[in-house]
Image 1 (cartoon, helix red, strand yellow):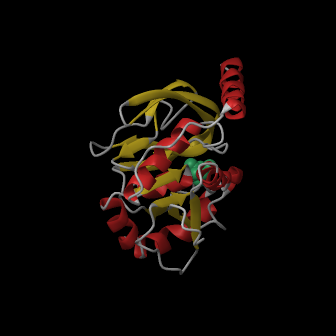
Image 2 (cartoon, rainbow, N blue to C red):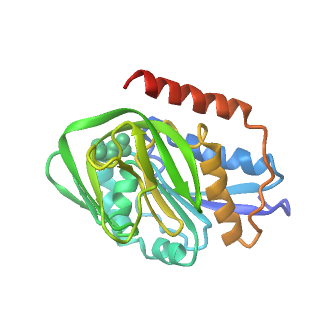
Length: 248
Ligand code: GLN
């Protein structure tokens, strides 16, 4: 779009393979929340064999089944340098579930076969013998602020963080990274991974705006995002939190 509006460029990695639970909805949230503020989003879709641009402000990697992750993992590792450079320069990276696992050092799937990761996040994942499924509520801390984040998880992977990243949050309800340490997700600089699908951002507008603020800052447009009327989003957030409470 060349409307003269401040534009955020988003690289959507593997939209055809990593899009379980309609994770594509997260992109729609980025788009609408920018448009409501007279800004815009340009989306570059990158599939198998396509090069990754290094000049995007936001990179997005959704979730997928082991089979789909296996298809993309090698391709991603071979061409990840522009993504690493962009992240190093301050671009925002968001990985959800399968995408989160591939941002780490690697994922050993349910059949035991190892998949390489790109090491943007200092973490390792190994599939367990059961799946960790259900609604999740966590206290997430980003940019010095702690808020409740809600979502849904469905993963076999057990993720353990190294010293190079911190958890996104503390699990109040649900399983989180591995079902043991009550931690969920990982953050290193502006690179963030989480197991929460659902999709994640429609129910967590604070998280969407935090990431958009970072992306706008990286794009050179300043971070001030005027508040929106988030009544519907707050209701969705509340409903997810209530449902998680009932399933305890
Ligand atoms: N295949 C991965 C796992 O089972 C990721 C699942 C997902 O993205 N929902 O852990």
